[in-house]
Image (cartoon, rainbow, N blue to C red; front, side):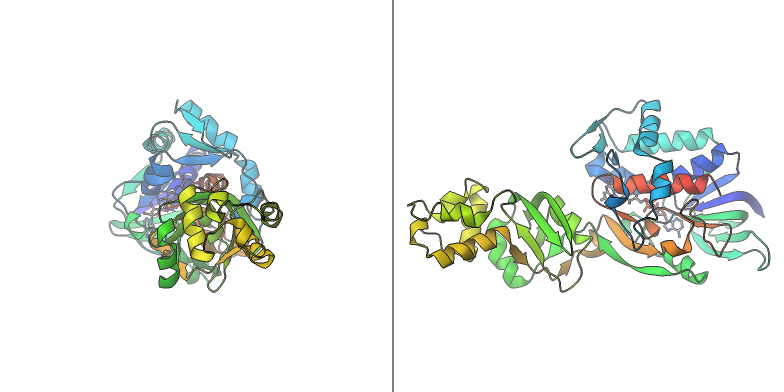
Length: 393
Ligand code: FDA
């Protein structure tokens, strides 16, 4: 039977960084990836340019039942650590906005970097290798037997880096969650995150004239708030601010959109109450013209400002600063950039990602209940958790 020190299941960002670290320590490492190539998500990430980290990474950028869990791994593998790897491979990059670093060229460069580092450190990568089962070699001793479609491997340690449920055509499976349950490890029920919202048919019909228009707004839900663009689509709402807030949303909740985040709309409208200017024309000073016209048509027939009663102006102002929208759902794992929830952090060592009650078994990356906001944080978590496990496995 094939013998290894470390078997890593999943050749994505977390699995590969872990393999490189373990390989550097002289461990005999194999990465088992069921796709025909590694890093399929890396290849399409960041619109093909891979937003590989964020300069402002901190624990506040992550959602987890235990917000402190990610601190240790993030502190020991920082954005600067990954940047130095990117620089070593002479990959040109730039900051797009808000600390988000992207390749100037292509996301494929990050995959090449990982492949080169893995090869330098003697890591073996087996693509087209599906893991069918993982069991303890002997119930009373350490070590595991890993059955794959091309034979079995015995290994001292197993690292589960199978990611979440998002985008099934890219190879997403529930294998990691199933394996966790098999070993009696608690799972925080996963949900699709960083995902567009769907709206009711009536609401969609009403919003159709706004379709394709994006507007800078502040969006809030359950205590979280994001200021970026929102975009009305033919299915509902999208755009960075919507994707961000979707991670905090739950069925039956509304989100609140502030279309004038820098302005107290009631004061603004009170100053205009005797003006001839129509409401839509007035609002087009602050919002895209097409959006202002369609939004007024949706809520308040546009007429000269002086014709509105003080009460109507108060209603308009409230809606501008506090527009409640009730999504009927999300576009689900088909469109979600990540899967929130996952292997409970209570079960893992925050230093090493090893399962406390199953020595030798590790979970890293997106399969763990640590989910980043939009902007390169999810890769930083994949690198950092992979590094933590690679130092120990
Ligand atoms: P990942 O999903 O990358 O890897 C898991 C691997 O395990 C896959 O290759 C899968 O095929 C394999 N696997 C699953 N089951 C298996 C089994 N039974 N046997 C063998 N192999 C198995 N993040 C970010 O920070 N910046 C960005 O720009 C983007 N952009 C982006 C765009 C899009 C469209 C998506 C869908 C996602 C992003 N993300 C992102 C999120 C980011 O891609 C994601 O969080 C990381 O890839 C997670 O890395 P993991 O290694 O944990 O899982």
